[in-house]
Image 1 (tube, one colour):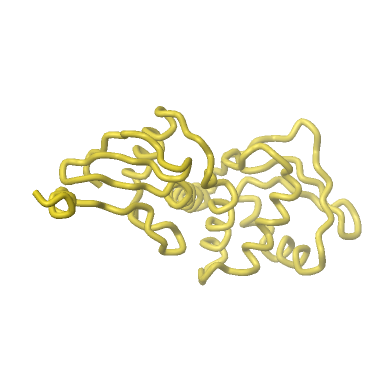
Image 2: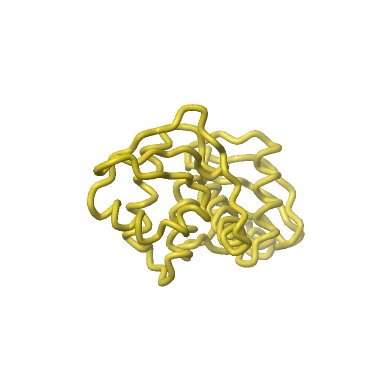
Length: 188
């Protein structure tokens, strides 16, 4: 990516930035998903997850398919940053979560991430399925108002990505309106 200067936010969904060759509209959710995906892949490769311990453990009830997945992929789930133990029957205790998960109902987040992993999202490996699941669940949502420093930081992190132009699904993270295109549209 070229060096970008943040101009603002449109519709609480798109970051508007200026580059040396035009204007960029950045989808904040897709961009953040790409950043988190690459971060999770890197963390699981190094086996150093960033875990946020929970002051009060959360009990979750897993359905049979979730329980099978949690058992067969226990090591990967631990590498993601989930500290989970069997509690009896379908119940499990969640004692820690990946630090990148937004605050909220961590038990529900864990269940949704297991479901996303099971769906696959078009990814072959469990590692990529897991990274996608965390990234999708943890990414900034469309409609969230960002302040200038948050927009600048997201663009900076996107610039560091190996594949900054697409989210893990392949959707574009940005649209570029070149100076030539802008001049043509304005009849210059």
